[in-house]
Length: 179
Image 1 (spheres, rainbow, N blue to C red):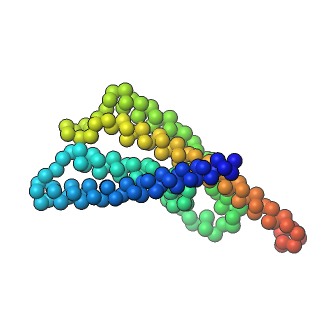
Image 2: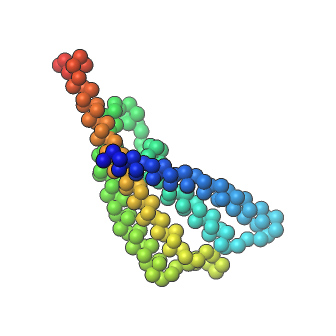
Image 3: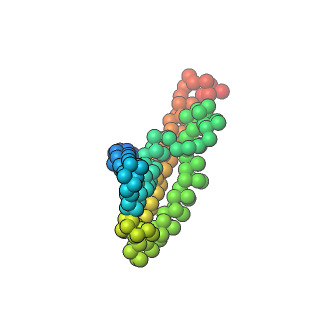
């Protein structure tokens, strides 16, 4: 199981690094677009489509990476003050109750959404935009699947954390074992 969890972590780490490198062409394209639009009154729909597609790829591919590094938005009013066991419980049950069901629902609908786009050979809605919009739509279920896998990895690590916290409490000489 540990090998599988490490594989999930490594894959999401790699996807996060790929996403970070997509920032370079995104910044260059946005700069090119702004300069040519403001100075030369030149713009193309496909350039703006490409900007949005790159932004979507960055956001989507980095979802599992962000969860792996505990950088998702959440309310940390109490979490930081919890001990390792309580943090493990929050991570485990939060993933089980909220993250996994949400990922499964989104996976089902996102795959159908992308498949419909492929079936109709969907392209850009504007003339001159990028063709094959279904390609970017298929990234949604792929990234949600990677987020789901990272959620399972998080749950496994939370279980390990809770077990190790329980074992430390049971060690002779610790205050909780003496009661």
